[in-house]
Image (cartoon, rainbow, N blue to C red; front, side, top):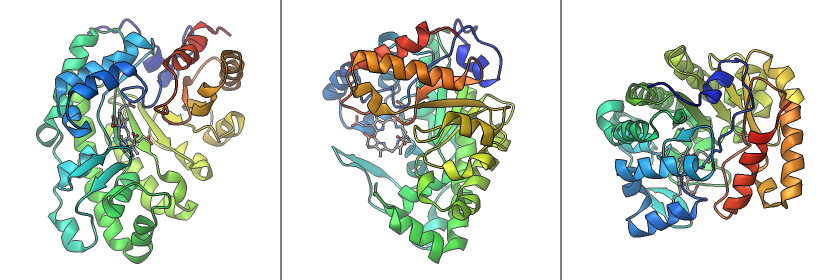
Length: 343
Ligand code: CP3
């Protein structure tokens, strides 16, 4: 199917675009009253993720309502741990919770290597339905969590400010950590290939907990596995790597076989460009809290951001996901400001 709007794909490949494309991390669900309405009528979050018709509907909502230049499939990074044998629940207002966690070598041996098409067929079905319903209006982004971030949840068992149990595991059981990271990586490669086969036009790897590792730990336990994923999918579809708070390894990120590096809002644009080099496209990086400001401030700060990145090799986004209490009008205003801006 021919895409009517392929700005994001062209920007990711470093090609010239008429204007800067924009999408928003966590645009599917969360911020839209339309999502909360449908969600209220249904069961819990995990059932929603496993209902392809619903997932497709929520995936398309931000394209219709916010006018973004890409859709991202409504799912979660935690579907991989579940497919490997660690089921989770989403506790209202608290976040994910795993009944079993990984502690020993036997725990790791019991985990399966997830097979994308079979174990995660519900995500592939949701992608296929979404692609049909989008009818080429905008590209569809598939995604997965980075191996380190997934290990963090699988060992910790829930969200945490410090993830000290997961970090303790790296210090006390480095061999097991590598065993687990390898299994997660293999599962993720199968999963991302299945997403592309089902119709994903682009992929993003979320390393949400990158910033809690030291540079040396990041180079040992995180980067090589992200590199494996990028190498396995290189040349298939454009890939974005978003390693939140990993300001200390930007030069290393620049060497990955991916198209785009996501920046969070703490990362200076010019400094990041200098460290990452001129080849890659950069994504980001407005502070999500900017969208609490008045309209004039949102406009001037957003235009400042666009000028800092320049006219090419930039995909506009926030520096992390939308917060659930942001007003839809402000979010839409941010998107419109980007779409109206010309260099
Ligand atoms: O970007 C999108 O809109 C696509 C869908 C998406 C979700 N989660 C849906 C979701 C994506 C890309 C994610 C990624 C994700 N999930 C990450 C990486 C990105 C990041 O924010 O750093 C992480 C760390 C998770 C794990 C997770 N899922 C947590 C910690 C929570 C609870 C807190 C929260 O964000 O609400 C979730 C739940 C979740 N994932 C919701 C949605 C729409 C909220 C569930 C609800 O409606 O109750």
